[in-house]
Image 1 (cartoon, rainbow, N blue to C red):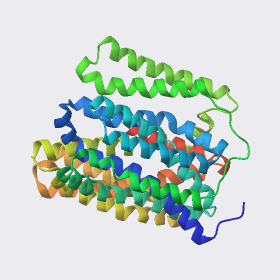
Image 2 (spheres, one colour; image 1 turned 90 degrees about the vertical axis):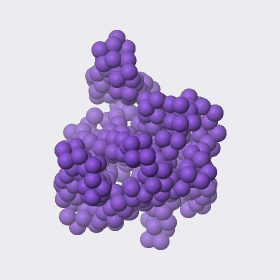
Image 3 (cartoon, rainbow, N blue to C red; image 1 turned 60 degrees about the horizontal axis):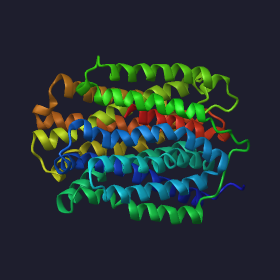
Image 4 (spheres, one colour; image 1 turned 180 degrees about the horizontal axis):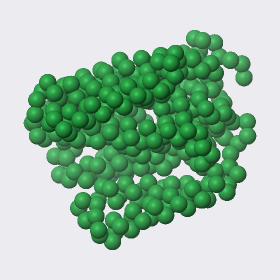
Length: 405
């Protein structure tokens, strides 16, 4: 396959960014709508957590399978299937008659979502062969998360206030259809030269690990941390980790190639991703509930409060990409960790929520840190791996993000 022209490479990048936009926008909008869902469904906080975490468990469990399947069967093909499933799942979510059905339909969304981001990143990696150009492209990719964070709370708040929370899922329909049409027209097909075999045992072990761990964390407070069910879930998660590591080492084509983690940059990027996205997940979930339930703000006003954080993420994501291209990933990672830690100190140590000024500063610092952290994580994860393994490497990086959340 010949190298695409610069204009076509930019177009492919834009199409891949559309897929990231609908997935990221869906998550940021959903956070703003949680209090409205809570009132309509008379849901508990743990019930609200499941609307987010059921999605995350499924997507984290299937990302590796989707990445390796795309490398084997064709990245364009899997990407298009993912767009169809995610868009259909969004429509079903808008029609959910109860909280249980919403959780189920969110899982349908997740099946499609697992085929989007890692496969799109694999397409980008194979489209942009020059390291500097790739770093800038990944910076643009990270900037889309900033756009979703900036637009999500405002759009979500406006929709919830004017139409209702169900409308937050409708926005995925036109964007998903546009991405589907553009993908069919402009994205070239690509696949790994040596297909990897399916690893069903490894896949089941990953599902057991993430499912049991998530259930224990969410339900532990209500059931009791020492209850047999919760202790059993933690035990199952620990056993699944041990068996998975031992089993995958023996396979010729493992679902998770543990040799990846011999690379210090790759292993470090994975750990940073877990920590950064754990911070993001807690930040978005708790701040949304705090602003609406404790400060009695409307959904739109709560969204506007979050704009400073989102704008900083939007501004600093492409800055991070340029820093990677000129200085490498270490500097943006150090700056990101410093800014996010300072935000946490303000919120936890100085009770920033008691003052609008301190709250604003903490939001700005968090946005700067998160804007800087995403691009070096992705760049480090995929740049040190062979291009034939790009789908799996990108999927491992994406999985670590979902595990953190």
